[in-house]
Length: 278
Image (tube, rainbow, N blue to C red; front, side, top):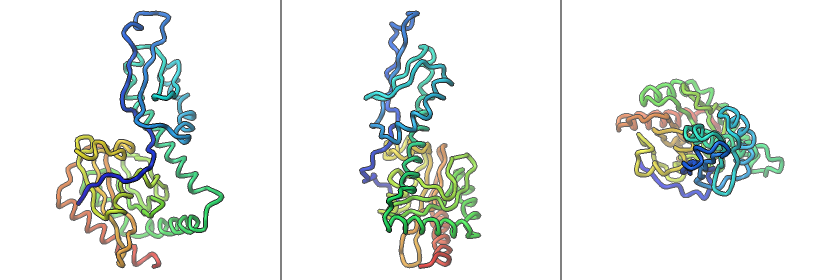
């Protein structure tokens, strides 16, 4: 078992890193328009800005705000002062939602590019084939249910992970995590991409209290506290992907659980190797 810093140069979508709250001097002024700034941890790209534009109207209406706009610092929010002072958690959730939508837009654009090279088309075809074959393996559903039961984590998946794509092959989800079989995540935002590089199991019980993963962008982006992911290898040593489970709540993961997970991953590797052509 090991943990590693991400070596990716990927430009992560922003999260809220802090707030500048309305000044007390504006609270008693009838004609004042209190303003709060939600500072960004990074610069939003055009995918994020497009997703923001599609979601901001509903957010403004739901929270009775005068305006929500992007500037160089982050989000500038204008509205009643009492609304602003109770809005911080909702704003974090909103930025998180926009970031998730922006990632999906990025995935869809990657998949649907009309000028895709022969290698990209071949990779797409291989991903579709592998997802279809793995989803039909009788052992997969029972393993995902077992790992969820063993860990107490309510989302588990078998993921196909290549140098260019992360694709869910099968999913066990009792918390509406929002990812279905056949869907992609942006590879660079996954810990599985790091596992593909170093080949070790990664696990943590409580991300926000962990010395490494409290500052790692992936748990914050996808909203989970506990995590375990084990590499799946084919018989000839080729990396196929990962068996992983996550939960938004902390979960204790002991060595017996890790060993059971690794046994499940070996069983999946054998079943995949017997099903998918070399």
